[in-house]
Length: 280
Ligand SMILES: C[S@@+](CC[C@H](N)C(=O)[O-])C[C@H]1O[C@@H](n2cnc3c(N)ncnc32)[C@H](O)[C@@H]1O
Image (tube, rainbow, N blue to C red):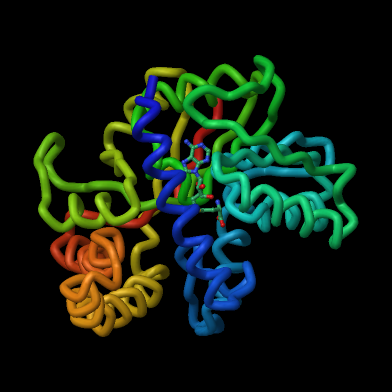
């Protein structure tokens, strides 16, 4: 079981980001919670964020009969979209109450509240019944799994026979067990715990899933570069403010983390993958 403190530190990161963005007058759709999927015809951030959902949907068979579990659902945008466009029944889970409140409001506005429910639930210990869902949707959620084997056991438990899993996320690709300074800085910024690609594949295979793994790093590269440039411009300012006592350590770590992600990808220690798994 993940330590309570691990979950609390992730929750605090998102609550802090939430407060800062609200006080800066930004609305949920202006918050880049995840990477975009860029292609020849997609260069705008909002369109790229949507394209990531398309890329995930392309890799998993889904129809109106399916019950989808969207773990780490953020503001519920994927959950709502899946209910709206595919007609699926969706359960979105998150540990951040403010995000869930916005998710419920957005579902209401979209008129899909009957098809989507949002639960305050940690994916290390889901309050969902055994064999209750057909598809697990995990868009940049597993990077917060402090105990990946525990989370995969939970997903295995809640999936039906023939259940499927689709994942979009960053994974380590270096020699297993080897530490990388930049990955550690990136993790420290978001309080994430990034698994090794081979570990997740092995754990899924051991549980009887057949997996496909696609490296899509070139498609998310623009997000990483934008964050890097922002981090570079932010870091001196945050250091200055920190020295004056005008911001705290987390603000400095945030700027450092944005830079570190780029460096880790550049050095080939971190890559972005789309992974699907289906019970054999
Ligand atoms: C990078 S955001 C991705 C949000 C969403 N999946 C999307 O695609 O927009 C990660 C989300 O995972 C949530 N999260 C982190 N740890 C979690 C946990 N243990 N259980 C449930 N949700 C979690 C965070 O609160 C946040 O909403």
